[in-house]
Length: 114
Length: 114
Image (cartoon, rainbow over all chains, first blue to last red; front, side, top):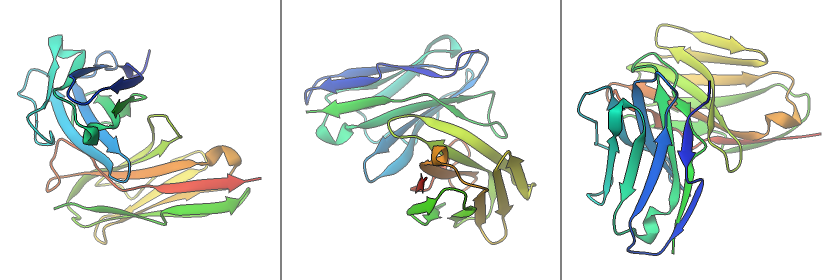
């Protein structure tokens, strides 16, 4: 089947605007992760969803960031009042569940805040 | 706090060489370790996943080893090819780092020239 897909692939926005990034995980994968890859910062964890459990939001950098996962499948990461330091590649990954399974990553959304 | 370090940061080799990429982690209480490849402008491709109870995994020309007690993993690439040129990332899932997320190293940027 298809891999993890993300949209848009690129997004340019003005400082202060809100943006929404979408992730479609692999069908049947119950675990979904968001990571951010900033220039010079490496990959950092943002948020994790597992089934119907409460998400692990411990990696979200500020309250301007939020994410939801509807129906246990598609996830949306929302950044409100974007700042220039939010510019990064936002990567989504999914896995069958948690623990032993491999995480499969999408191609990412490249966000540029002007 | 779990920290992951990769050495070298960059590597340039002629085609055909066997090479070793190194990954070290500060907390040996890991659940598993995963090696990824990232091509420029692309997402991550999973190469090998080693569970904490395993010592190595092999896939084609790739072999990854894990020495949990010393906090080290190596990725061995045999008979390197120009198509192997990419950034290689090591990531661990550990209890101290947060069970639900991968902690990534900064990567080794590999260039294999003909």
